[in-house]
Amino acid sequence: MYTKLLLGLLITALLVVAPALSQDEDNPTIAFLRYRATGTEDIAKPGIWDVLQAHELISPSERELLDENLDLNGERINVFWLDAASDVTNINAMVEKTLDRGADILLTFSTPVTQITANITKEMDDPPVLLFAIVSAPYSAGIADSPCLKMPHVSGTHLTIPYEQYVGLSKVQSPDIQTIGTIVDPAQSQSVYGVSQITRFAEALGLNVEVASIASAADLPQATASLADKGVEMVMIGAGYTESRGIPAVLGVAKDFGIPVFGVSPRMIHHGAVVGAGFDDFYGEGVTVGRMIAAYIDGILDISTTGISSRVNLGVAVNLDSAEEFGITVADSIMDAAVMVIEGGELNVLSEPPSLPEMTLEARKAEDAAFLAELECTPERIAEEQAALDAAEE
Image (tube, rainbow, N blue to C red; front, top):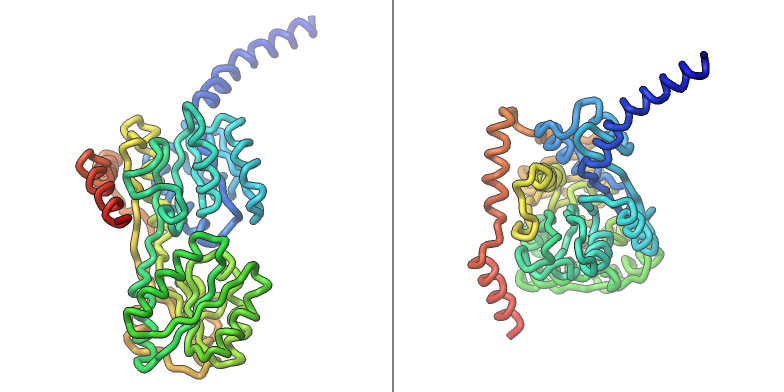
């Protein structure tokens, strides 16, 4: 009698659970693929979660799981995470594992992960959607040719570093400066692009540019010393991963020579750069890609006709403690533009923390639709972009 009762309860439980399991399997699944855990990603993700929660695709309790980077089998969407552990050789296996798990949306962070994911999925007959964020140079990296000249399953948002304004800060800080130095890792497309832009705009200002080449982070101290030997008066770091992560090694040598270091991200001041300036609206990148995800899940966004978005923000930040160590006074106009300042070991954020404006879901969907409509790849826009590329090759 007990056995029959237990069997009956088990069958009843399975009948109740089965629909829920089926519902989870039918949910769209988002795979987050990243090169490594980064502070910039931690700023972007809340923008994504804010949008998905505002669109009622995740609940507050599900949001808590995602905030902890935990996998989610949710009521409306599923999410899982994979990490290459800072090793490029792991990316291929990571992407293949993701495809085996049947993800519907691949959300990639960083240039190398996006490059490899795009190359693998372009050979598929019916690839999942690929959306990317925190990519510094998608066109020079071969991810796309232009915002609308791209693979049909690919879109996303990338940071557009205003290199002209960034390099211009060198003259603002030191009007009589003659020579700046920078560092390039030839194996990284974003590093090569960044140095080309620094060189281009510095020479337009009449500055001499010395470039030191590296093969790994271990070369950074010697590269910095070689720049000092060539008489550079300032080192300006671009968007390469090796240089960005290794900026403490650059600073360790630069301080010995009294050469101030500027970094291309405001967050570089945390490592000791005197000035960090460039793109820092990573929350905004998260909001943009979140809008794309929500609209795609709602069935109202065609990725094939959605152009790649870009955002520009100079975002100046200053480390006054480093400036004191270098024995320099930061120019008043740079201080006036600062959104973050480190002084006495304390970080003072001068801008409000980012968040979504309060509005009804109906109003939010209308605003998002208007934003995404601006990204539409019309035949006219495609023709204009192709003509521009053709002209550049002549």
